[in-house]
Length: 371
Image 1 (tube, rainbow, N blue to C red):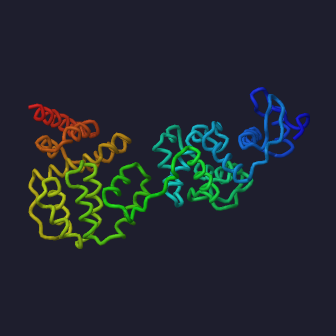
Image 2: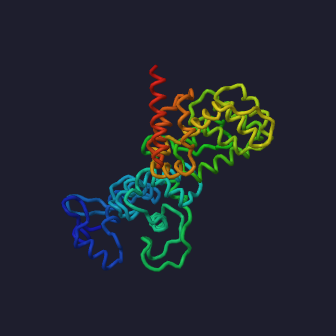
Image 3: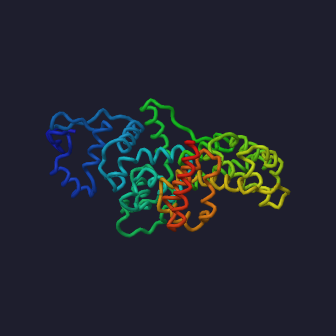
């Protein structure tokens, strides 16, 4: 490129306003400034002060790797996704898709965006988002003349976020540039119960978690699955125990032997009794104290979710939570999280009498612990 002809750069190395306007008019390019920055970053052009020269003609894959790095890590101000805040987090979104190594349903994409706080200011048009990423070559989708979602569209709306093969290659190259080993999605069928539970507690989208659980259970007989899960739950924190027990609840009578073998463990006994009774299998009676302990144990599992969405928890627990006369007795339960559970109920119950009973029981439980 002759420095005396064609576009010139401003003093900051950006495309001049007049050149951007000319490119927009003559080439029909919606955002010539972004393409200019990409060309400079990829080495297609070289800028010296305000003069512009041809670059060193890098190979196509080198150019593509530079494009992926620029789009995922530079401040593109919303030019990629249509949302400045989402442009800042686009790396985490594609990193999630890369790690899962399978198409991500749009509801799971929404759940991921909500988890990182990007939906706090309102919903994002996920169909338009995928089309914009497809326009950039990062996602699989039919792209028409309106990749931003404006105008008519005769194609099918995308239902998943799926990386293109070139995007996968570009992500792998970017990981290498960062000096980290390209991550690989764990095969949940092959991992043990502790690793499965750890993955489920890591905050993965609900639909992905469901797929992991179903795949893991298909990979082993019910008796073996129950034994592994209950081994992982034995002596563990309530949140781990709660996840393990909830998965065991999916199993049928074939798992009886493994569950019955936990009747001698104080923390698992109430869950085992409940499991056996629910399937019409012989089981000892659940004492009132054991029933209370199990109620506290399962409520402890909800503490984290209640902190993330207190309104939703308050609505659910007020509709289906324990009655006041049960809550009044919970302070007697020898459970490490009984105070936290009662305080949570005291904050969340919409019935004032029930909330007052929970606060009073929490006070008694704290006093007992001090004493």
